[in-house]
Amino acid sequence: MGYKVAVVGATGNVGREMLAILDERKFPADEVVALASRRSVGVEVSYGDKTLKCKALEHYDFSDVDICLMSAGGAVSTEWSPKIGAQGAVVIDNSSAWRMDPDVPLIVPEVNAAAAAGFTKKNIIANPNCSTAQLVVALKPLHDHAKIKRVVVSTYQSVSGAGKDAMDELFSQTKAVYTNSELVNNKFPKRIAFNLIPQIDVFMEDGFTKEEWKMMAETKKILDPKIKLTATCVRVPVFVSHSEAVNIEFENPITADEAREILRKAPGCLVIDKHEPGGYVTPYEAAGEDATYISRIREDATVENGLVLWCVSDNLRKGAALNAIQIAEVLINRKLITAKKKAA
Image (cartoon, rainbow, N blue to C red; front, side, top):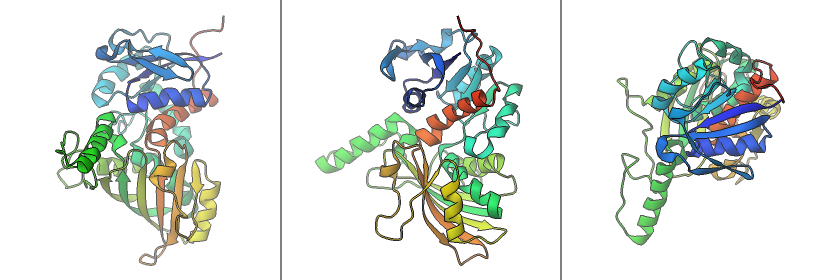
């Protein structure tokens, strides 16, 4: 018996990716519904070889929906996720609205799938920030082996993390450079073409940005509250995939060779680590892929038990859409939910 799945925000980058991945992974859905705001009613989106017409979120009856994949931003999720959950659908939300709510599990299936059982308090499960998701996939197996004390991470985040308008801005600015036209900034505080911007999201009182705070807070909630983490998040002129340079300090000894072997066996990780030109993964190669790629694993002699590594993943997939669908698969595989509609 299949499930009824609703995708809210179906016209956005992540919503479209969710529909593609549902089809790719042969998700056991008897019916998939595309939902969006009223202005997008009737817009067509692809679901495998089918075309779905978007319906209005405001008027939709969720009483027979089993799983709602929510990718419409924090304000929409804050208003609608509790209403949808109250109608019996499990909401898997991609925004930051519910991540730090103590009654809402924050899940990366390779890391803390068992915590998904806590969804029953609000019928909501939170998807972590894209940069956090790939980081904890890489950290979890190393933490299990040698216990992480502290992490220093610098991110190199693609413009797709800020939405389709941000991708369009990088494209138009790049074109403007070559045609000697005016560069217009709408989405970013400074030009992004051929530049780096050391600010993602708003600044907080302590000088960190909200994106950096999310990485610190979410890693603690998902992995271990005792881990100390500091982050510097940078927007780079790349369309898809986030990259991270990660310094890790452990309580117990661990060598680079041990880390390589551990990560090769870890779920969701792919190690590409040849000490030669090109023997590592870049954002371009990770785009369209499901794995969290790990390269440049080496020992850090500046601390007693230290490692450094390079971590790359498609932020629209593992950082958002894929992770949400993996959570839905956890609900089904662990028999945490059953389909509302009985087979005819």
